[in-house]
Image (cartoon, rainbow, N blue to C red; front, side, top):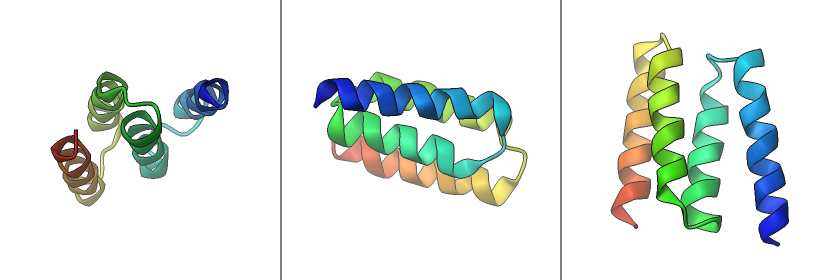
Length: 74
């Protein structure tokens, strides 16, 4: 099962350069990293990358709120 998570993570990461302002990519990476992979450092990296790439303030706030929520469960 771990291999499938790694594959999913790889696919999500490949999507970032193609559509760097797509909030859903970062949210999915963070959820996958924390809930399934138990690797919060991957979520942290996705959060920071999202902050760098997202220009919409509302989406940046959503990203931050989701990150805070996920990290509170770690």
